[in-house]
Length: 213
Image (cartoon, rainbow, N blue to C red; front, top):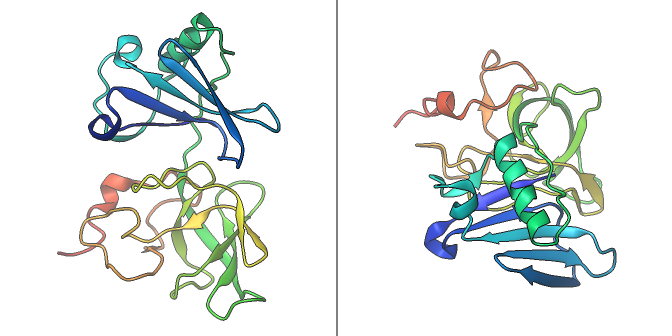
């Protein structure tokens, strides 16, 4: 997994690369303009900070999540290798915001407001996602933030559980996606039945017209 973001206003010319979820015990190692963050227990890399990254990638006209090209990933791996780090970055082109079909929505065994859903996202196996959306029900199309998605507010979606039930992803609202004129109360964004095929990458541009001013 590779999730990258760039926020020059807050962090300057620094690219943040996330490979794994944070752990309780971490260590950092810096060589020149690259810092590696790793898990003390396993030694696995959690992420990298690439300082003065424009010297390697050129100008980045993004404020938020960055979708790197294969060439840019190769350039960063060369930079890692030049600074005595493992060139371990792998290009991730799998769409993280997709159209999902709610196959079922059952009551959570330990909650009176959560539902345990099974979501078809166009793969061989349905995702189990615990949802607190008050409008959640079976037989609707929704937007699913899959594991590895970065929300507009910077939140990264990781596998987890809610009240003891596993949840692998998030069913999102128009507000959480920062869509113009989206209702500001909780509730999943329910898509028209013919909006896009199940499993397709969610069309953010088309979604600009989902809500009337």
